[in-house]
Image (cartoon, rainbow, N blue to C red; front, side):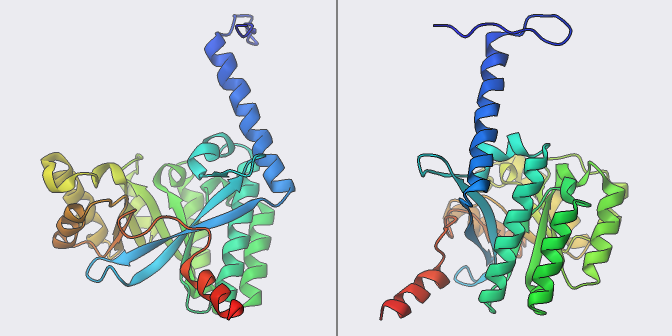
Length: 277
């Protein structure tokens, strides 16, 4: 049976497509809320490797994942677009940070980046989680990287710069994620003081044979180098791409070529093996 049409606040009839999209968003939000209640959240860890020595991770990125009611692991792309502008997105940011801080405390050799939205700046519980984690282990701050997407940073750039300056003083580093995908105003860019620049994967895919991507990536890379930032190419999937990016002067590479995001990273499987032995 076809979905019934609904009415918008202005009295106009909503389309069946919009109605279906709205119902889908409600379903996703309910899935997120259930995962939070049942603590079915975890991080999947993906290595970011040195461009000159891909066997050596420079750090890992911790990517939030949830389990749905059927026990399936959902990547952030399935639920974060729904959560991003709602308070539930702030709660997910808090959970991601809490899990990441705990992992940093338990693995002294680990350096880890955690994603957050600029919308979580000023969210009281997020700062409580951070302060608790830093108080638990004094070495955590210097091993924590906070990743903020370009589009998120530009929502409230003045607030982001103040926030970053404060946490920089505490030893925390910052990465600008998905650079090139948003609309950074360069009058703010020079004030941000990001430590790491991660260039969006749309410019990286097929770069070894795509002249347009080569020109655009060279321009983005030069910005990172000018501001003395560690440069990372995202979404690297093929050896030909990696070879081109290494020759171009990137510091680090990230993508399926070097490792999938894993909820049971190598250091955890080694711990389990030792415990079993």
